[in-house]
Length: 430
Image 1 (cartoon, rainbow, N blue to C red):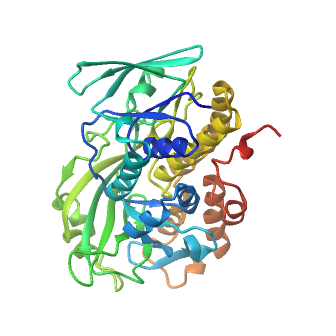
Image 2: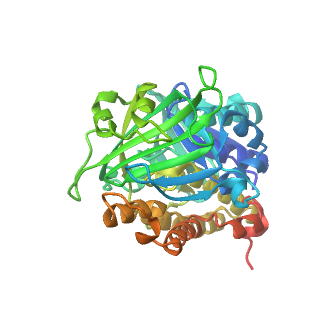
């Protein structure tokens, strides 16, 4: 395939798509609505299956330099008692690490690479896609600046909408869908400059779905000697009706104050982590509702398709959102290379694989995914325990963890054995 691909959205999914297609020799143009891309957000995790694809794009070293190689994931009760832990990344036998990193740092790594490789003249900031029209052999978009002033039209052989959970392209395809679905959880998120805890490379989750605290280091370069940048998420859930909508919009810019949630955690002082002190060590807190959308029956309309959060926004459970957008981008590249000159067939293969795969993760995350043990222990032993084995068995814990890895596509043996998703041989007809 040699015709130009139009990409809507300059976030993680959009830029990885641009870099991946450019590497494959496919010309691209990126249209991003904001006039300037900023390093917004807080911490995220890139799982081994995503890091593997980033290595194929020669970006692994830059990500490792800016992030932390997560060694362990550990679950605790609200009293600080350990429920379960497992090694992560290369410690678990993967050929690739799990990288905990600031979302803004990841965004800047991708943006610098795109500007250098794809070219500044092909990254169009301040360009909002107002309308998409797909006809035989071509897709055309109507462009506007942030004020609504016309910026003309652009044509390509394919359009990839990677414009996030509030995607304007998805809204054109599904005008009656309505707002994202809220599960009643509010997350307060921040980055603290604080001393390391445990081994300095562990991601922890404490509590249960109604009141939870998550934290993990995202940079070894703290502002003070001996400190680290530690990402945290304080989460509280309240009962809601099926049609409830949160007051807060899901974005990266809504500020909050620690007094809004710190009292919930004042007594969460463990011998291995002082949660209130960690919260107080942050300079800024952002508030987010936990939202997703129902899986769609269709992503592709003519020569336009969805990718990343525009296609399958999911609850931030299991560290999967950014990773799945990366897998989308690489799978789409492989499908286009496997079917040169046949965009329709390539999009059919892409959607046939990625749509059901991501729908399973959306559903699993609604059922608490790998965090289910926290709920089970809270239900069975709300006042704590002396022996964990009296509350939940090792077999039950392992089955939950291994089952989620299979659903999310990063079981160790299968990931280590398979080819890159951008390898066209993986997508050719048997």
